[in-house]
Length: 88
Image (tube, rainbow, N blue to C red; front, top):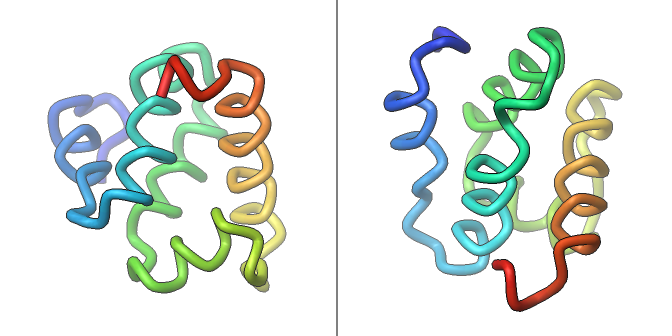
C-alpha cells in the first residue's frame, strides 16, 4: 500500500471490529500526517496484519515478534492515551 494514498489507508483502518476502529481510526485521523515516512510505512505494514492479532496487541494481550510493529503499537497506544477517551 502506498503511504501517500490516504484514501486507501483510511479504508484499511476500518476493520469492522469496534475495538480496533476505536484504537486505529483516531490515530490515523490525528497523528498519521505528522509521522515520518518510515513510521507511515510501519503503520501501513501493521494494517496488513490480521484483526485477531491487532486486537491482541492493541489490548496488551501479547505483542508482535517484529520490533518495528511493536514500535507502532506502542505509538498508537501512547498517542491515543494522551488524547483521552473523549477524543476517540
